[in-house]
Image 1 (tube, rainbow over the protein chains, first blue to last red):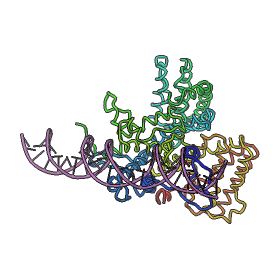
Image 2 (cartoon, rainbow over the protein chains, first blue to last red; image 1 turned 60 degrees about the vertical axis):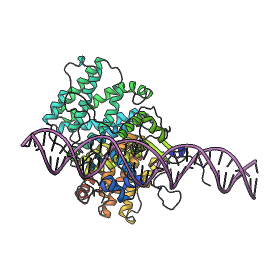
Image 3 (spheres, rainbow over the protein chains, first blue to last red; image 1 turned 30 degrees about the horizontal axis):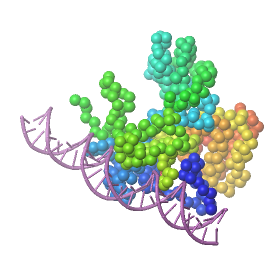
Image 4 (cartoon, rainbow over the protein chains, first blue to last red; image 1 turned 180 degrees about the horizontal axis):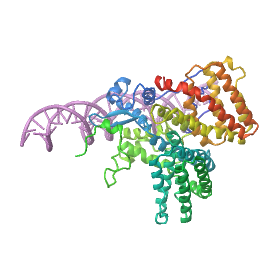
Length: 266
Length: 266
DNA sequence: CGAAGGGTATATGTCAGGCATTTGTCCGTC
DNA sequence: GACGGACAAATGCCTGACATATACCCTTCG
């Protein structure tokens, strides 16, 4: 007989989707709401249901799929958790197909990266490494593709009187600066890849008490990077960003372990 | 009076979460299942509910939150769609906290990137740019951190007799090669960032008919990259990867628009 | 003594039906 | 023409019940 395995154990090591026990290929029995969600999902991904389009109402879907309304609703919750549909009450309400926005995606990735920090799979060094890989080129690209509005917004993230700000406010400025650099690089895919990485690191730092000198130093860096971008000098912008990140590293080292110990959300 | 706005219009441009209509800060009314999902989610993210831990059964949750079982279930579907819990039937069943795996995350990101290609926000150039940014350093790192097993698996992805393979099989080899390079770089965060980008591009190509000469060329590149990694020469590995990607670019150009026209899943 | 087999408790999965609430629309009134 | 109320169309949520899968225990038989 097959070795006994309780549900709890199976959940710890779930069976792979495509690896059958033996040669024959079989699929796990899918619950009704999974099948419905899957079908609707494919209709959306395949373009059969265009963004903005309205799905049939729940009662109709229930009839079409031959299930109860409760089951349909559970499927719809799955889809809406993935930002594929939105649902509204009332007349003219119903479920509408939506494309996930960059920000949805960014938020989702970030919260998952957050969880990765808790696992042993990914280390602080990994985060810093990827951040360096993405933000240095982003600064370079920003210098090449800069426009007036980006430059203005960048300048606005560097406070004139840093000493008058609380640490929390400092971090708001800080976060804005890096976000705007990523926006200014003109590549939304790069933005959405780098933003969550930065964001996780940032939040780790934001829970520590940092000296005024530290914040002054950061603002200095930011000013230099901004200047290089404004000058349209990609090499200098990249170098400045690299230096900036390298000098931050020791601070992250100090804070990281404490973050893990205190728990993820604190 | 405020301008009229129907549900459908509101869905096209949903109100920002944090931007209040006027000075006072108010929150949108949350549906019951949203509140419950949010609470449970925070318990998980905050570590109050550890991975592997079992949630109370649905009836108990319903009592605790003061709602019906159906409402609790809709919340649980949301969480399980985000891979935060898994649910099993039967005695010893219930909902167990799980951390999303790297592969879950990768898959999810990929399917969202897929949708991005359909929007006008992200272009082919953006994809190629990010891919270059990530895979070139990945090849460099792989050369530095390589180990025996990775080298073996890399070699196995380069067929000796490419002409005997179907196009589809070629792509399986192809995909394996790049995936293994990303794994061999030793940074799981880099892996999970780069894999979806690569994957989207790859699938676009895989629907076109490519010449045998093309496949031979790719295998050649792969061989050179593998050799550089095996030799532990990061500079050469990076250069070879860059060349490889640059030479692929024209092919993507040819295929991309057709992919968009035929629809995403076609 | 050990293995096989059945019973049972415990959960989730699904259904049916109904009432509450929200919201767009239509229509009548002033 | 503006205002206001009735109405229709959806989702939101509830109650109660039955179906089904599964772990665990207990009995029985080789």
